[in-house]
Length: 497
Image (cartoon, rainbow, N blue to C red; front, side):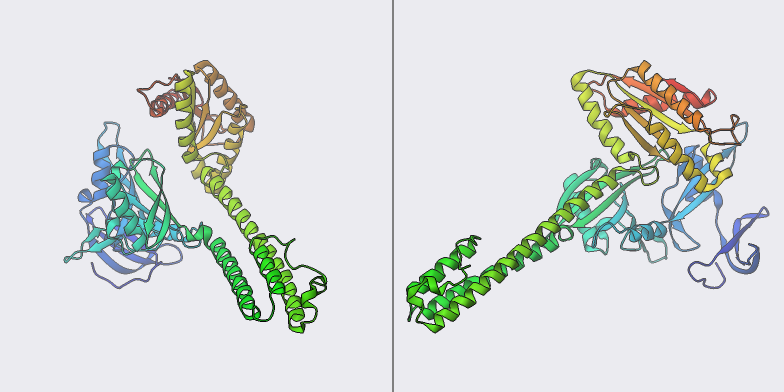
């Protein structure tokens, strides 16, 4: 490699010539996107790169293993697609790369908790990205990049959680889905959720969200300590006054002692809240100091009662705010941010619950998998904003078809949706699928690159009576196979498996 050091964010143009495909030349670009100044040259054996080998081996669209980039020097992952001719001969590989540092920046921008953290790791235990912006790799003596295990992270919390998971489950492959646990850390408790992130392109990561207990109960504990402090001060004052005044008076001090005990118990009606307390105690009328003391104590009692009422109101308000925040957090965790219907996490949990219930009751459980036909073409033609609008309209239309509260409509991922139909056989599922197709046809969303010129759906459905030796994955598998059959038969149709 040769050339000058570039600042972060500088755009460069890479050039590869047919004369020597193993050499890449990089140029600074002008405002027209043309190379204007040579800055780098590197030699890379294309057919020996990690992403090329991954595409050739998989023979399908897939994510490559995480590997080290040479320009810039960092870790990244590529989405690769092998290209074949009509004779199934490999012609080349299309690759689009993502730098892991970008994922870390995204995690750092999340604001779900004052001191919470998020990190992603592979099932091997190696870090992918972290909200602390820690570099997820090391360099050996030769300058080569080495993956950084989460158990060796520079962040103490990340390191402690990874070590805890490894000690409890032996290997990260053994960690169950949607794991929630509490990890002790330096005298505090960390609330941890470990959720798998998987897709059909062989991506299998673990997303770990960490929230310290102090984020939840910090203000409540502060108010509680203040209440205890005020109560202790009040008790000390009452006790001190009793010791000093015992030498001169007996009965008035006894009344004060009883009043202080009533305050400590929260019994304000039996305290010294009187308009003229001294007049009701004949023994104290001739003692000016006692008269003044009673007036002061009465005033202090009123102020203390007001303080307690204010503190109780604050604690109640903070508790209500925490309950509302928890409900909002739970709602956000189960909704898709774009379409505002159930997300993949909610779908997985709901399907698992209904699978167990239908197994007990021996009733059929149906699943419809839905895919928007040629959605990539739609995005290419109308742009990502148009694609998002299309997804929102389709989601709203699909969600309005199932009428029963027990049915669930969810966004499965990308342009895919799923409908869980309780107590429904194959014929009933086909009727729902037909209603969905009618609803989408009525939308008449333009799709000029498709034969029908409007957006349409391909659907695969399955219905089973669950048994003890099966899991809900078989229902998804059957529906997925039916969906691919629908695509192979020309799309814009529903196929039952």
